[in-house]
Image (spheres, chains in turn orange, blue):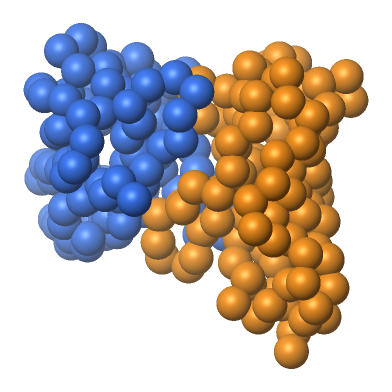
Amino acid sequence: SQKIEQNSEALNIQEGKTATLTCNYTNYSPAYLQWYRQDPGRGPVFLLLIRENEKEKRKERLKVTFDTTLKQSLFHITASQPADSATYLCALGGKLIFGQGTELSVKP
Amino acid sequence: GAVVSQHPSWVICKSGTSVKIECRSLDFQATTMFWYRQFPKQSLMLMATSNEGSKATYEQGVEKDKFLINHASLTLSTLTVTSAHPEDSSFYICSARTGEYTEAFFGQGTRLTVV
């Protein structure tokens, strides 16, 4: 069955540093992958979508890579800020299957 | 950006009763809507996918007779939890999108508590 794993439950970094989150998947070949942000008690908010034929996508301080050979996506937040603290979720394909999420905490 | 409105945001009901949750896309037409369930500190578990005018496709392990989904129009989908029990207590979230290869927009979620 499809399996999606995101790196460590919680990631703590210092303000100004780059946060790197990982999404690995098995038994699946998604045509595209998405990243979302979720704050406590709220629904997820879309951040970026990357297709299988795209290696990298950027939006302001965000960057996503998609390696279909490694079956992995990396999500980077540069110059991180305390306001970036949230849970980040990757979602695969048309059925929008979510990983378990990584809780990011940016300390001032 | 596009807005998805989910109502109610929270509901408390007695065991054995039914609860309906509405999900509306306010400024776009949603060809596909998704319903998720989320337990504390866990990710979103896909329950079912629905396309306007057709029956919902339920994920394995989700009881279709218990979780009734109706996608009557391009802007409205409803989830009815029938004969609710305390174990159905959870955070239910809907999302909608306009088509494949597009982002999904999520409602604010419904906190269901069955007592």
